[in-house]
Amino acid sequence: MTLRDRLQAELKDAMKARAADRLSTLRLINAAIKDREIAVRGEGEGGVVSAPDILAILGRMVKQRQESARAYEEGGRLELAEKELAEIGVIGEFLPRQLDAAEVDTAIAAAIAEAGAVSIRDMGKVMAVLKGKYTGQMDFGAVGPRVKDLLG
Image 1: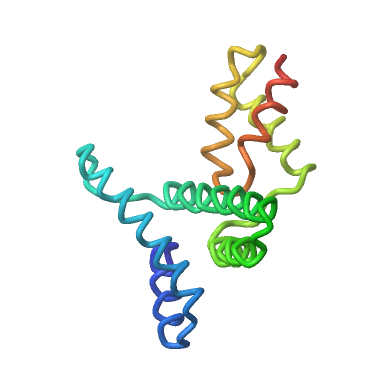
Image 2 (image 1 turned 45 degrees about the vertical axis):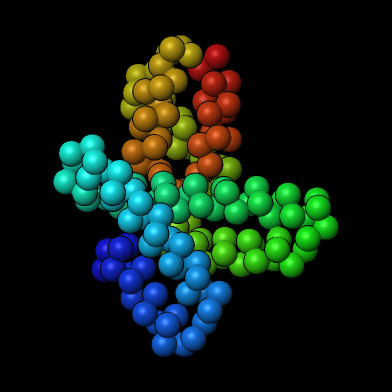
């Protein structure tokens, strides 16, 4: 079952179960994917969104909700922060397992070797290898500085 099929099945299940919050989040996910399909169609690429693209969309959605939850907590709006965290939980069900620190370090070392990187100029190559293999499994915002330190 593809990720897209799984999303559709979960959407139907949420409708049947009358789980309003879950249904709302799943609809947001589908809307984001449809927006991306429209953008791709406009670029002349056939309107098909690949699984890595969907994972990237989900990753961005999680990051947005984390930032919103943090802002709500700082503003004393705990009920809104809890809603954002609940949405993160639903979105997270469709993301692959996140790598721990040791696995990230191993992946970075392997990517550096695969790209043949020797200096900071090769950072883009290393990041491309990591994004190709580990989309949705690591936070590339945190990985970038670690790669930079190793190549630095």
